[in-house]
Length: 155
Image (tube, helix red, strand yellow):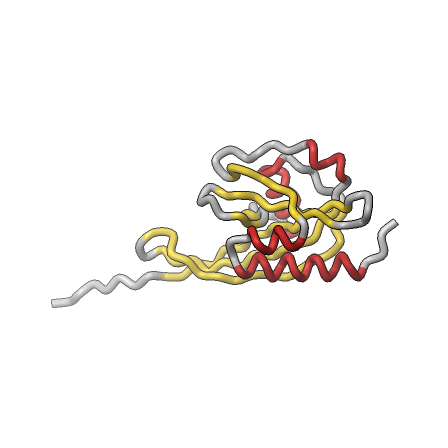
């Protein structure tokens, strides 16, 4: 008599997202956070579509989730890795690449929430964003972004 053993298999998924900011008239950055469908404050991100680079996917996801078109990429901030179970026996190992994008303050008026994905967006100082962010790895990305912004000379 043989027993059929079912073993969950882990599949890899790649996603991309962005830290979006603008500088106010005093040169102080404000950061975009989204409240997702799970009511968690986080950064815009999503899966890579076939043939997309991480950068292109990040730009697309920011637009799909917020209606904001980003045009100036400052650089890559880093990646986060995590595992989760989508359904019983469906384990996913996910890597999300994040990029830093600067927009003009006028672009913050073009907000359109993505259907079923985002329930609210907000612009926050670094201190407010760090308090609001619901995930530790997102806080680390925000801190890295803020350091990168502080080192750059702006026109």
